[in-house]
Structures are given as structure tokens and as C-alpha cells.
Image 1: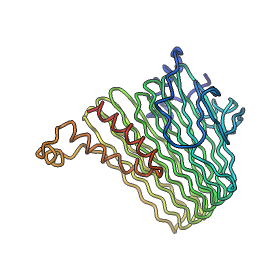
Image 2 (image 1 turned 45 degrees about the vertical axis):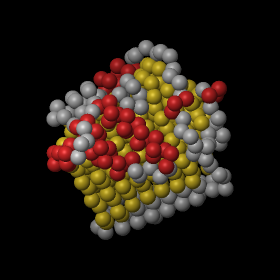
Image 3 (image 1 turned 120 degrees about the horizontal axis):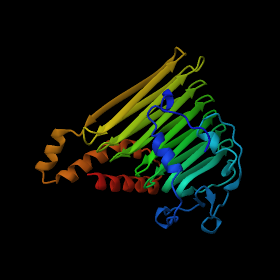
Image 4 (image 1 turned 90 degrees about the vertical axis):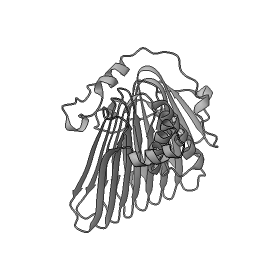
Length: 358
């Protein structure tokens, strides 16, 4: 394992590096079955076990699998570069069904790079699911040419261990990147991204929901850089923390000189199910252009006592009432998933977490 960052570094002060190190040192076990995690949609299905491609359980279609050497300076992402990974390179002339990728970890550490390249006006959808235990480390680099559209939905369901994700994206003219995460497993996690809007009228929507309980810690650390005219970005994150867990949301918008007419918005909200839990929020704006519309909001609170009383007075049990209000709290992040089957699967995962936590 290469040298890891430390909590003394500002960018990693909330990262559960102890959990990451323990997961990397754990012993490998038996792989879980992927059968219950495939969604009922057409398209390629790719299975990785401990970062290794499982061809007997995969139908790759247009997904290529080969060694990938990706250029990154990120201390976690650099460990994945050079391993055998997967890539998608699409043109607008190709009809691409959604790609499902399941990552099963059995313990210890595994690293896997990915590259997504969409040519002009190409459209693609990717759904990734993480299950198992151990340290799962992923580096994904994304290049979207003019008018390309990529939709990604990522659910983190590992029962233990740690999942670290590093996304690096360049979004071209009139292209769009929409990515939504759901952290509803028992693992620690870090979602880390550097997203650059490099073309006129580029669009990014990047967010999700992190659900933590017991001693668990999850976090996101996302920076969106507007480097061209007329760019729009949305970061919508929700965190729900129970018991003595910790959820941390750090979202940054950078507007370069000359990136006029930028429209950037951040919405970070945390919900404490018990006062022993912790939610950290860190919205940031760094603006060097003078004709922009940027806003951020950050709030942490508890369930509305009046709303709970109203539901209880209508015969709803306390646990059910808390589940309904909490589900409504995370809905505006999960509802941003465009595909019905995928959105319903993510909602079911969130509901299962709520049932166990409440």
C-alpha cells in the first residue's frame, strides 16, 4: 500500500483513515453473490471481484477491459492507475444501453481504474454497485465532448470496510454530467471529485445521500471548477447520521476569470437522528468573475417535532413516522436520478437502511 494522506492535511481531516487502513489489512473471504444486485434493465453487465474482472458472470458488450495508465496526482487515485480497468468510448452513432457494474470485495485492498470518453452528442448511462468488505479504491476519469451526456448512479452498499472514489471529469461545450450517490452500507467512505466545466454552456449535477449509523463515518469532498462561459452546476447533498456516527459534506465551486454567466448552486443539509451523531458541512465559493449567479446553503437539524406529533396523532407509529420524515429529507437527492428502475432501487436501499436504523 502506497503512502496515504493524514488527517493533519486539511483536505482529509474528516476522512476515516483508520477504517481504511484496517480494511486494507483485513483477510480475504468468500465473494458474495451478485444475483440480488442486478437491476432489471437491458444492457451490459460487468462484475469485478476484488478489482478483478469476472468474465464468466459478465456480458461486457461495448465495454472494453484493459490495463489503464491514468495520469493523476491524487494520493488515493494514483494507487489505482496502471491496474487492469474498464473503459467506455462512445460516438453518437452507437446505441448504448445502460451499463451495470457490480464491485464485490472480499477483504484486503483492491484498486481499479476506469475511463469514460463520450464523443460529440454521445449519450451513456452507468450504474455501479459496491458490496462486500475490505478497502475498495476507484479512480474514474471522464471526458465529455461537445453535447455529450453521461448519467451515473452509484450505490455504496458494502457491509464493512472502506470505499474510496476519486472522479476526475472534463465537461465540454453543451455537455452534461449527472452523477448521484447513495451511501447506505455499513462501510466508511470518501467520495472525492474534481470536475471541470471546460466548454461553453457545460452542465454538472453531482450529489447524493450519505446515511451513517453506529460508529460509521462517510464523507464527500467535491470541487467543481467553472472554466468557461455560461456554465451551470448543481451540488445537492443530504446526510443522515444516527447513533455516534459522522457524515461530512464538503462542496466547493471555483469560478475562473472569464467564466462569465456562471450559475452555480450548492445545497448541503444534514439530519441528526440522535444528538450523539455528527454532521459536518463545508460549502465554499471562490469567484474571480464578476457576472455570475452563485449560491450555497448549509443546514443541520433534527426531525421536526411538530411533524412527528402530527403523524403520531394520526395513528402512525413513532418508528414509521421517523422513517417517513427521513425518507422525505433525502428524496430531493435520490429523485434526481432520471431512470425509473434505478431510482426505485436506490429508494429501496434507503428504505432498508431506515428500517434498520430506526
